[in-house]
Image (cartoon, rainbow, N blue to C red):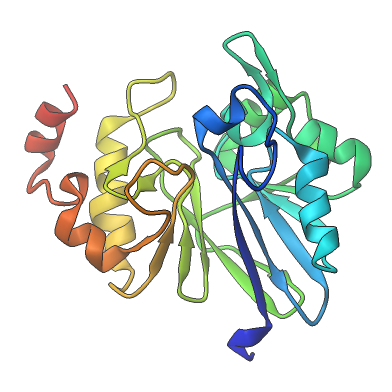
Length: 237
């Protein structure tokens, strides 16, 4: 497939959508549209905060949202109750668009609990599964640690990493369902199989730039340079 046919947009909460939301900009979530330009279809990654705003971005590009990819079940990524703050997400999206939500099978129960969605709304996946949108292939990588069923999405040479890996950082491992040892293995074993030139697209704008490469992160991200699990556990407290 011609690389120019790939439709890929990185959207920042508070800037590209939810511009007037009092909290969305502080959370600095990234949402992504990934699809096939010729087919006019895309998958929406981690829709939260402003569902109609995200759909408007796609519509203005002549793209129809054909499904949802969820990196993990936290409300700032899929909607729900965020410490007492109601956050729009996939539940509101499904009221507008009758699409399926692709989650890792381990994440299904958490997703349903947080968003109020049902079994029929979800498509359950395992690591290595591939999803086609038009002629564009999205490969699922299970990267537990931040949550048990956290998953990243590999699209050609782009890695949409959710809260597993950030520019110069990684996701928290002190939350319910987090696992520090699994995070270490996700970073140093699972993501280590990917080439240096893969471009990193994280779940939050927490770094000094919105994207990076895995090669650059291996050189400069302290969380990818910890030499042993013992050292990692000490670092993580």
